[in-house]
Amino acid sequence: MSIRRRLFFSNAAMILFPVVIIIILLNLVLGGQYRSWGQQLAQESDVVSKLIRLSSLEQDKLSNQEYMDNISKQTDMATIDIIVLKNQELLYPTDTTDDISIEDLPRFGNEGYDPVAWLEGNQYAVHQHDFYFDDGSKGSILLLNSERSFVRSARAFFPIIFLSLILLLIITNVLLSYYTSKSILQPIKQLSQASAKIKQGSLDFSLKPRSKDELGRLVHSFDEMREQLKESIKLRDQYENNRKRLLANISHDLKTPMTSILGYVEGIQVGVADTPDKERIYLEIISTKANYMNRLIEELFLYSKLDLNKLPFLFDEVNIIEFIKDYFDDIQDSLEEDNIQVTLTADVINSSIKVDRDKLIRVMENIISNSLKHLKNDQNHLKVSIKNHPRQIEIVVTDNGPGVREERLEDIFSSFYQWESSRHIDGSGLGLSIAAQIIEAHGGKIWAENVPEGGLSIKFTLQKFMESGD
Image (spheres, one colour):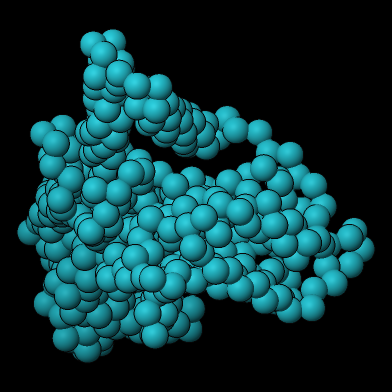
């Protein structure tokens, strides 16, 4: 239930609940007396009807003491007095009541029923019927009831009822206010405590909404925000750790070739390379180390641009089979130097794809370079296959190297990751991470699988180019 509805029903209950309770109490306390009062009214009406008939048909009986006494006894109520007046003089009873004088009785012309009439300081209910005697005299029949249990009880109970109503209103208001405010303050208390924990740097907790209203949804949203904040801090820490690893790896990978360069340069300067052949060998080593450092710096620069999404992509429509064939033709000589045999297989593919040529070449270079670093067999073999799928093309590069532990297959695409057995191998650990970012920028995905007979397969997909309307 929403807070608005809860407050509405709470306010309505504050009013209706005490009223209902008071009605029930009135019915219990005054119900019996009300029925007794109704019975009295019925009896009085019967007596009044008889007296009215006498005043019309048998006026002489109104002065008959015995007859009137019998009518009075028929009421079975000691609190009812019958008075007959003729010309404002007492006709019945022969002696007036001790409490009321004739002068206080209602005058001729006040016919009707008066439930609350004050006579001599006492309260009565009065039935009055005015008529004329046969001789033209004014006559009045008065039926006085000195006890009205309902009216008196109502008057007696009114202060109690009023105070009870006020008390019930206060109790209801307090209770409903307490429970309503509790349902509102509890989520606020949850949020306050959670905010204090977050302020102290603790995010290892969870918030469970206790209701489905606006505050419950707020608690749920706050908990989602806490979870996202926890995840972002985790990613930040991971990024910071990666940055530290980057500095450590780059320092190591730059220091080693730089030390070699400085050593060979010093060797030339001090005359260790005292022959032209030695000097040429030293210079070739310096060139190789400098090229390695240059490639390492290029990889860092490329990775930085990819990470910041600031590297532009120029997509061209290409035939993927021809593209891969051309690429391996270009690197054939270097593969032969490393004693690498390449086998290329491809499905029949009639669709073209849109790729950034240079970036896709970089992907292939990084994958093959990664495989070559770990090939230690006498017969090194790379299998490249191009598979056709309904909406994408899958390219698989498989080597016959040692493979990777199953739990580490996903890690090889992480930034700065290097296999446990390859720390001595040159490289920054960015090659496969760069390849993964380039493939993802093409709308594909990349993953690795171990080959049962030995080796590792790097697989990636590229989306087919669909003409508009296809």
